[in-house]
Image 1 (cartoon, rainbow, N blue to C red):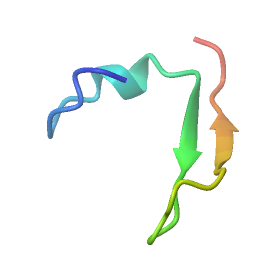
Image 2: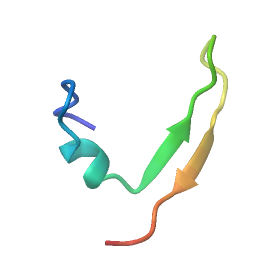
Image 3: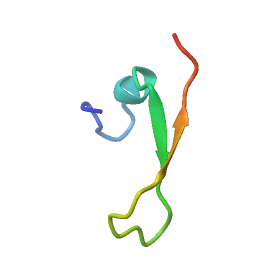
Amino acid sequence: MGRDRPGLLWGAALADALAVVPPGWRGEEVELLALPPR
C-alpha cells in the first residue's frame, strides 16, 4: 500500500481490495474483500 505509517490511510483509500489476515497467519492464502470502485 505504501504510506502505511500509523494514522495515514492514503494507501487504504486507494486500494482495490482488503486482505482478511487471521491472527497467527503463516503465509497461507487469505481472503480478499473487493472494495467498490471509486
